[in-house]
Image (cartoon, rainbow, N blue to C red; front, side):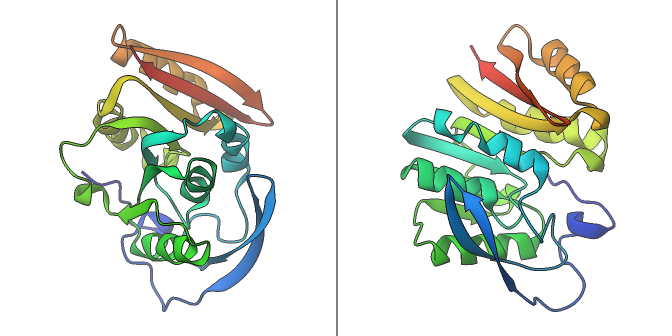
Length: 205
């Protein structure tokens, strides 16, 4: 399974050499220096949707297996690793540059509980206690639904996924699809509306 497109940051190998630059971001209430580069999602800053999702980071469990779908340069995975140092966070992306930058940032912050890999490299039998994601909405509904069906079904009983989706990019229709597709095994609720984004919580019963 992969979520690739012919352009921009969905490409597995972005054009041009990797030229990193350091930016300062706020992770878990602390100013933190990280590395980014062109050819990935939101290289200049933490995008607004991810910022909204990260306001919920304190609700992460102290331990367990977590998954960040579409990690980019790593803001969600890094925040989870800082919040829950006893958890193991799998950070996945199809963009090789994103994976490289997430590895570099984990090392930069001395975080040893992040496993960075391509989706197909995740152990097939693993189950997750939590999924946190700003999912790649722009790949289109069919591919997005394929991604979510694959990974949501890897939640443990009692596990949760938190997804942030922009309202004008179909958050309400995605919420409806989640309820229709995963009921009655899962429960889907809207837990936050901030700026132009909604945070959806999907719980496996």
